[in-house]
Length: 339
Image (tube, rainbow, N blue to C red):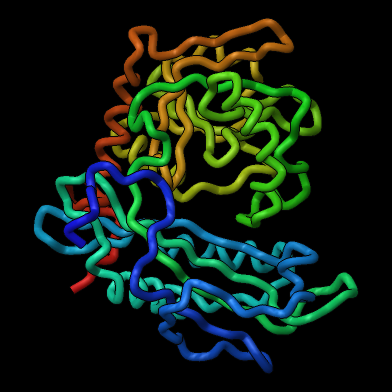
């Protein structure tokens, strides 16, 4: 463990001691099993491989100044996984089993939780896949749920520093009544081409417009969009974006700070009126947006005029992280503290 440079971690995979697994067979889930292997032995005709019966989650555990480990809002992740299961017809994992396995995975890999002063965290990746062999298009009758963990640094290498994003009108991430509201792998596969094109152009991410009318802001690929105007926290209302637990948390904190909160359609032209803008999600918490370019329309919307994150984004970012690390009181009951 002495060989890990905690303060220089990327957002990548590192082998840890254990993962935790539960199997759904004959209509019921098995007791959690600890596993040291990083590999799965699944049938080549498993529904997850052929028909995309796969859902996942992402959450984090943090070590506080007091040495205690805190897991952030795992109950919400359990509920969102159940929503994904309903969306693509997979066996729903009980909330209690999800939480039990998250705690077990963190406890058994305790030595990989980065120290407080590093600013890093332990990323927790729950995964649920259809495993029964089928060639016809229908849901599996057997499933595997597993949780792996890995220590990570910031998702964007720039950290909490404004980066440019781009609108690419020729790409859609998800259809309005499709699977965009579920955390399934297909949504991310659909974003890879546009994401790579954005990176080649020097942008950190794509800001998608709604797939139906190409008029309204949808989301930033792997994260939700939000903006600040007139002491109001504004975030898109859409039937094709993932309900971010980080965004939900930030909306509550914005209200606590006396801001008004609006969840509504955001026409692209309104970008010109925002004082601050950002992308938010588990991985980055908040990634402030420097500017948004719309090459096809010949427009560019600038934020962070001095190259720094706006004051409200910064306040929200530090407030949420302070709760996650235990530096400020958890007044909303979001944190699970391990003994």
